Amino acid sequence: MPADTLHLFLNPTAGRGRAGRRQSRIIELMGQSGLAIECHTSRSPGDLEEQVRQHVDNGAKRVVVAGGDGSIHEAVNGLLRSRNRAAFGVIPTGTGNDFAKACDIPLDWEHAARLLADRIAARATPRKIDAGRFNDRFFANGAGVGFDAKVTRIAQSMRLPIGDLVYLLAIFKTMAGGIASPKLRISADDYVWDGPLTLATVSNGPWVGGMFHIAPGADNSDNILQLLIAKPVTRRRILTLLPKLMNGEHLQEAEIIHRPVTRLTIKAELPIASHLDGEVQPLQTDFEVSVLPGALDLL
Image 1 (cartoon, one colour):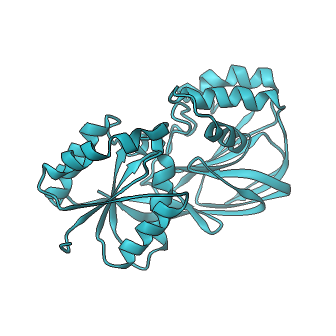
Image 2 (cartoon, rainbow, N blue to C red):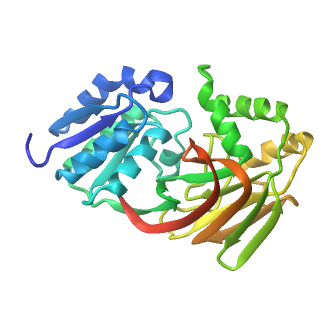
Image 3 (tube, rainbow, N blue to C red):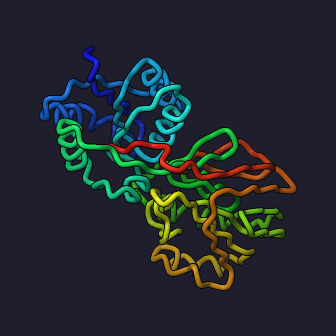
């Protein structure tokens, strides 16, 4: 392959299989701009990450990810684990597409593919965006511990073709099992929380779960993360908060604490659920989180 080959990484299972069904059309659309494309498909969880790392280690300068937030999460970890630096582009074919929304990437996948191919062909300058570090992993859009991590786990187990609504249904299923209030100590810059809570999220982008505007002020190019803590709440209170969360109108509610941060630590009394970009992580008790300013080059 020529040195300027564009490497396309695709998760065929993303978006309940939509990415796989669109593979040929994506290659066709991007090829219309005269790009030399080499397509790589992931075969199992973690495979896309490793493929991206290996290709960038071997000199790939530009990679494109066709998939959802989970695929982007893997690609970002591959990019940031590589010894070299490469720019990446995104064609959103997932369920929530939170990262695409944060970056103003069109959610119409065909339109996004055409625009991206044109930018690459014109050698447009990539824009620098921030990433986050979460212990020994990286995240592109956001991380969370507590209730939202449990919701994420349930949502991933569901195979209903209902788009973003899968996250809303997962919330109701999670509530049916009760609302846990684990005790955590969070130290963030000059702020400390020590006590029970429902969830804590750290956002690089404004959206989670496709439909929840959890961090309206988040900007993934401002070198800052947005910390949100929700104090212990009842099932009934969650139901009244949901519409506000969808509209980004929850920050003034009594149960919500919001702080801009650059780094923080979280310590739980017992191992607790967590997620990165909607990908569930092993149960842990200690977390170190920080922003990585301008760590990524977005095509």
